[in-house]
Image (tube, rainbow, N blue to C red; front, side, top):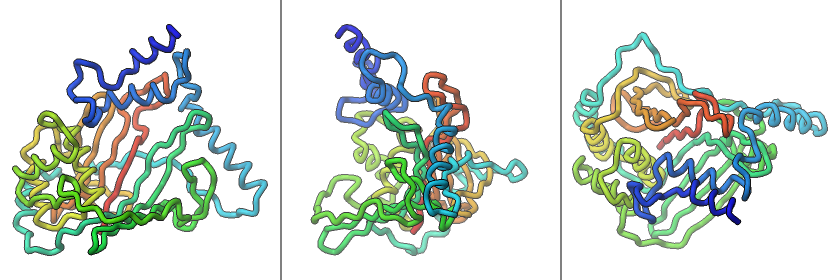
Length: 318
């Protein structure tokens, strides 16, 4: 029992001196503590799995699956590498991008509730190796306040190839992981309420949407942007307000030009925080957010994590 209590105290995701209240979002360090708590068996210091051995285990499992099945197409299993920034292109400042976005506002496209996103995320369970899960998620809202959510397993980098699902098994490209219809919701609180098209009010909106008790730092603000884009498809006015908000935020530096995982050209803006790097990719003409990538910047021997491993990547489309 003493070992279990010591583990709980050490893994406390919300210490008394932490920046958040108990019902607020966790920062990156707290998320790591919570992961360590939920993934480490009682009485043990180290997790059962070693991430550094994951690639070998996954490849071995997939070779077996291919040898003893009738599949002849190689599966899409490779974890994404970090996006590469072009060093020969002059970075565009967020102030310049905000001015471009504001000049391009003409009311089209319009704000729409719902989202269409492609994601690559690192999945981990207690008894299986960690794997990168490629998923596409489409959320559509109806006039009566109900909405549908469709999630499929697919990797647009490898169309037609089988992919890994959340339980680590191979499924066909486009396999439906879940399809749900939700009853009407009339909540008027962020992020369900429409986001404002003014930078100042949008900052307050994002703070309320993520239940932040204090002014969010840059990393928390980028998390709030993800929450927003997982609920709404922004119009040009809201995108311009968001770029202006980010331009007035410290900690985001222009890195240069990248091509995202959907083949779109964008401008990258980087924020370094404890152990990770967040890269925001934005349309160079309209300022619309195209994607957000989070990578590890330091190796973590306890988990076998290497520097530059991709923790998560999300790409939004209309």
